[in-house]
Image (cartoon, rainbow, N blue to C red; front, side, top):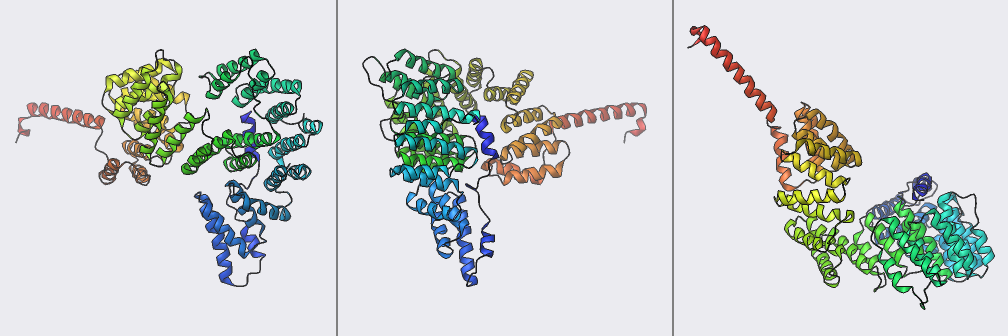
Amino acid sequence: MRASLRKVLHSSVTTIGVLTFGLGAAQAATDFTTETTAHSLFGSYLAANIAKSINDADAASSFYGSALSLDPNNKVLIEQAFQTEATEGHWDKAVPLARQLVAKDATNRMAHLLLGLEAFKKGDFKKSDDEFRKASDGPIGELTSALARAWAAAADGNAQRALKFLDMPKQAEWAQFYLNYHKALISDVLGRSKEAETAYEHSMRQDATTLRIALAYARHAARNGNLKLANEILDQQTDRNQSEPHVLVRELREEIGPGKKTQLLVTTPAEGMAEVFYGLGEALTSEGGLSMGVLYLQMALHAQPNHAFALAALASAYETGQRYKDAIDAYNRIPPGSALQPAIDIRKAFDLNSLDRDEEAKVILDKQIAENPTDLKPLDALGNILRARKRYAEAADIYTKAIALIPNPDKRHWSIFYSRGTCYERLKKWPAAEADLKKALELYPDQPLALNYLGYSWIDQNMNLKEGMDLIEKAVALKPDDGYIVDSLGWAHYKLGNYAEAVRFLERAVELKPQDPVLNDHLGDALWRVGREREAKFQWDQALTLDPEPEEVVKIKQKLVEGLPPSLEARVGARETMRKIQQKRRKETKLNPALVE
């Protein structure tokens, strides 16, 4: 489902999130009264774009406002300002801008979607339908329009019209998934249980792994008295995902039972409208359409401000954009007491760590550990944060506490043994490290990270050389586009003196991860060994620009001045050559004593 959506998204032309330089044409058509005014307009526009590029929404809003005050009829400015305000959920500014925008550009899909949502919230379902109809441009626009119009018709009490909007047999399979899902939800809300069940069954055949579908179908079954089916759906969802039961699955199991009234996932058309924008927004952000996806998620929250899944998806999108403070703010908007709370707290802890507020993160996780002493997740999260901060001894202790909670480890637990093993390796406790890394591979034999770490560690210590190289080559075969793993293979060849092979793999590693100082440094070393000294110095120079560790800066600068010392092979070769020369001279001396001074 997602792969098909990705193709549609990447083939769509969208201006969302793009710095638009079409203002030049608009300026050429505008009669500025003074040069100062023109500079002020263009300066405000550029400042707004720069602010937007560094995620300073307030500054971007202010600068776009300044630019619009100088050229209020400029369509490019209106569109950019609208996108900024809507993406940040500033509806008091976004809605008037949407009205201005459709007056200038009647085909602007996002503006029509917002105006349709505004009319829906006010109960003007006729106007809502009209605005959503005008938003049906492109595959995603056509699907959004159909789903939104269906919920507007449902809100207006017209079940037949609502379900007719969802009858689109010519739509692609990925779109049919959403159409069937919302056909089930609308049928449930309107009391048409048989039609809902048929639509749920169809959705499950298309994608039985999606948690949201499983929860909706299980709630439908339980509400209609089919407790056996409800439990089977939840069992299948867990089995297909090969994981522990999701916290919401466990929560729902406790809700359903004889004599209990189970609530539907979506109970009102307003919640259904929010589900439209949440579902598509979450998919878009996951498949690379971050800016458009965030706008959809904001619209979901405009329809239903406390939609926990939409808030969590918005926070995740902010994390992708490295907007960690905004992510924390979004998590804090999720109503407290949810079954999602432990997971939310863990995500907040990681965001705080990304903001270099690791002690605050530790406080949150310590509290989680105290409140949930048998839960592995907060222990694992705290261990990971401490390990990332190079607090290896503390991290190892935390992982040990986590492992104590696992009487029978299986494939799911490989990462905890792997993580403790890497800590022990950094602490120079190799026997303990090796045991943990081997355990990780015992649990998950094809795990690339564990294969790579153990294999490289062996080679680095000049032990199990063939086995170590086999492990790294297997890791590369499993993840050929992972720059760090490819680097390990190249560096292993370097350590073994296979410099030509080292260059081949290290060049590939730098192609995959050009901004990593260690990889550039490694490539420089390998290039030097094969006699490409000018290129080697270029790579070392490059490594210095990429913020390497302070101790590495000194080493790299020394290499730029002095180059590398002769390799072990070169030194051995030189000694062997000198030995042969000396032997020859001794023979010559015996044959001709006159050679002796």
